[in-house]
Image (cartoon, rainbow, N blue to C red; front, side):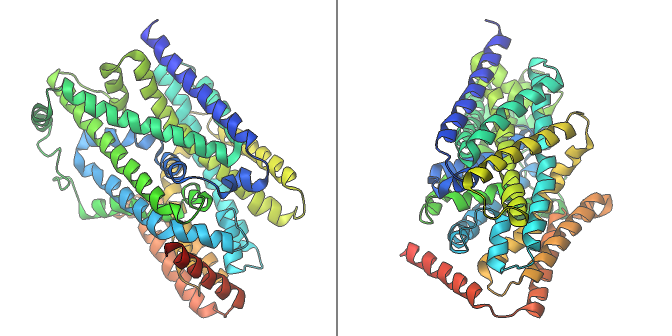
Length: 495
């Protein structure tokens, strides 16, 4: 067999595994709660690994190694910010969101929780939240499909549209039939593949570069500031902007929905340890891959034309073609895990927060599960249409989506969980203005060059929500009862 054949075989085996997991999850999905939230029965390992895989996407295997290869450890501040943000998200949001969403009318989506928690009789919060999720995740899903198309085009010489369709059909297939369980189980396997690949490349690579000492010498021969977090290119605004990426975690629906699905609040602590451990080691592996790659090419007098391919190229140099194919599958896993997570959350927003809230209120679970599957298909078709042109400008919205979700939902989630006096008017005002500020700031080169748009969007949302809530607050016995019940349950779970 040729190297090409071995690598393609690895990809085919990976794809078949995803389909089989989707079939397994389909057999365990019997009602709407199963389809949208896995019956709130996920274990800590599945919760942690699926959240990590859904979060990281291709940035972990290509974007971060490429940035550090080209500019050094000064680019690692974003990894530091994300790690701190993820840890705080597990610590502050996970336990309380798990309990509160069940106390507040067993809410199974973020918009339905905000609606129930704030007793929003107008349904505006639910609808606006659903629209924000629907719009931005449709673009986000589309960008993932574009990445899949380019992956097959660059790795195997496939036609771009063929690659896009392969990734779309497989991902949509297991998401459509297996729902949240399929997404969580496949994300767990994808997270493990990503983790193993990222650890193996630098560990094996360092033997090829002559050990630790020679590797460090070779790296410094290329760039004496490669290991410095405070290199001459670092600026205060740049460091703050990179760390501020961590703020986005509080408002990412496809990540925090995992907290709602874990089996019990007691298991969030174990899940946090697994999730943060996975994240730290994976990020370290990504950084190590770039550094070992830099040393290897320096020692061999070679030039890597595209730094973002350092993970792919090193995998092909260090391993048998079949193992190199698994390395390629790791990139595909990163892309597909994010697509599937965003698809199921978008489907939930469309059915649970818009269709169900506005039209059908007394239909059977079977009806809503079928509607959810139809929603996955519709969103996927629209996303594929938007991504049919590989040069589509929608890819520019991916960076904004993280900031937009963080600015729109982050402060709102934190306030609903920790401040009983937040009102529906305050939450809605903060959410809308936060998203608008992040968008406008991000579109201005002058402003975004000063600081990442999530910072002003997040802060203005927080301040406005608090001020408007003080002006519109009226005591509500039901809200107070739920808030107190949540605190009591959290206290009893800790004892």
